[in-house]
Image (cartoon, rainbow, N blue to C red; front, side):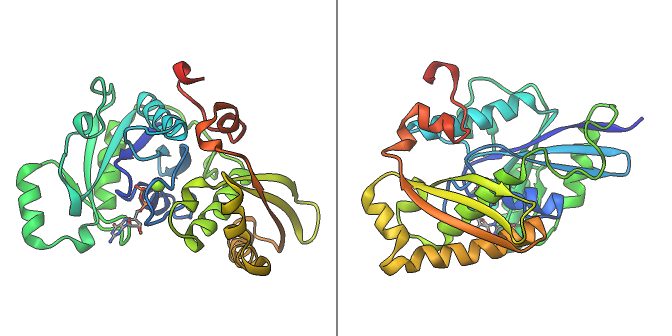
Length: 292
Ligand SMILES: Nc1nc2c(ncn2[C@@H]2O[C@H](COP(=O)(O)OP(=O)(O)O)[C@@H](O)[C@H]2O)c(=O)[nH]1
Ligand SMILES: [Mg+2]
């Protein structure tokens, strides 16, 4: 009998969750950055190997929300915890203060699914720190999402916890999310790479038009910011900054869709969208019931 189920990856911001998802799927699905809070919504990857199918959820970092968007982010992570058949609690081994998911993430109760502890960034962990951690957490998996160290053992441990079940998706599927979603994420990632300070946190991206039948493929995307001043910075002197973002983003999008792309990039202001429920819903972020 095959096995199939949901593997949810959770942890603090910057632990390496999105890097891990990409490593597991072997494709760049989830955007990665050294800036915390890059992942805003659940990202789904599907890994089918032999008679095991894992539906892997990458999640936003578990933190205490300070504004409405962060409420939606935490909600997405908590929902993914509820849905899990097995949980991978990913901790940055270089910053491993709290190894208990319940206290590190301030959960109200212990999740239903079994929890595997994975200590990431083993590639840069000094031997003595590793020995100390191994003593503190004898069952922990030492892994590196960057190099692949320890990943096979972690996968085997996760597979062992999955229920017997027919596959949930076709074997060649790698995600349940739309190409539009991934295009918007790649554009946002590029803006994040090229901009500094608080602006990356204020950007949302929406793909307004996607014409696959055209050659090159025509994509119109809008970058939303929260204030006029941010719009000016994003566009730059004579449009130079926006052109740079567009150029770098187009290359990534072409790799994703496997065709030449014309990326028509716009900037608009949606005042304080991170604090407004209707704006969040429009971008597809879901809020917990009490905040709607
Ligand atoms: N050295 C090292 N860096 C890593 C590893 N995994 C992730 N990173 C880096 O940690 C940062 C945060 O990674 P990301 O996947 O975005 O973390 P997330 O916030 O948990 O999704 C990025 O700069 C990654 O390149 C790893 O195994 N080793
Ligand atoms: Mg992430």
